[in-house]
Amino acid sequence: MSLRAFLSEAIYRLDRLGIASAKACPEPVEGTPRKDATIVVQIPICESMNSIKQNLFSNIPESFPEEIFETLLENNRFKLERILSSGQATPENDWYDQEKDEWVVLLKGKAGLRFENESEVIELTPGDHLLIPAHKKHRLEWTDEKQKTVWLALHFDS
Image (cartoon, rainbow, N blue to C red):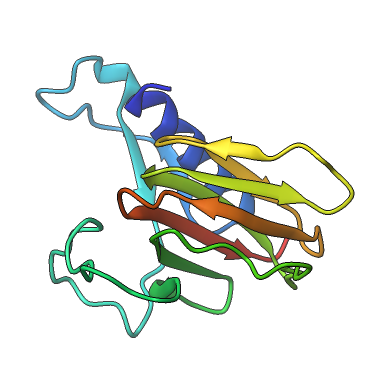
């Protein structure tokens, strides 16, 4: 999936959920490849959010025994978190059963995810994303042991 297609999909989903509003820009932005494709995205700012530049691929520990969950943005409608994995898996016979819908995108590394009552393990590679509905039991079968796996997870009410 191209970056343009990925961003379009993300903006569409955020707009549908009411987390952000997207609309055509009334004034074309100079330097854009297609002036008719310019979109303005407005996202409500959280009180805890700051404007310090950060990088999703920085501040990754060399080793960590458990997955790391880091909240990047949160308000009363959603939570966006970075997840770091390094060979971890959900313990045998355990399942995640979450209260909210979760949209995940794998940015780096690889992982295998499985849903309850399904034998197929879904292999995720960079750029893959999927929606996990609330209370859809799932587990992480494996994550890449050779490199760190970096995810973004968006939790929201449907």
